[in-house]
Image (cartoon, rainbow, N blue to C red):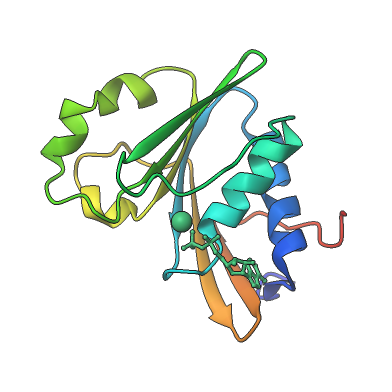
Length: 148
Ligand code: ADP
Ligand code: MG
């Protein structure tokens, strides 16, 4: 059913969902991650990177704005624009070069750079439902739960 709510029950399912996003964008793309602080945006990115084989620490790049990951032949850029004061700051850090490449870009707080980022290929909204999360995707994709 089209209106089915997609619920992520716990952190592991959020990580698994991240892995599904990696599979959907083998040739790169622009993904916006919307959700309040603590919603699980970074957890999704961590799961995505783990699914590609990255073992190290994955944190929101709150002060550096972007964290690059090269995993085998794939480039992943994880942005956290929460502290972005002016979209022009993205210009200084070479933003365009990131998304004009065939990298996969995952952007937390994209609204902070409105008008500067390209159109996303996918928008993921993460909403608090107590300890669970509801996910809305545009365009709509079906989450395979309990992968792990
Ligand atoms: P954000 O990047 O959106 O600020 P984080 O991913 O850094 O959020 O943090 C999310 C926190 O919420 C983590 O501590 C995680 O363990 C916890 N959490 C609890 N339930 C869930 C869930 N269903 N999905 C994702 N994270 C969850
Ligand atoms: Mg984060």
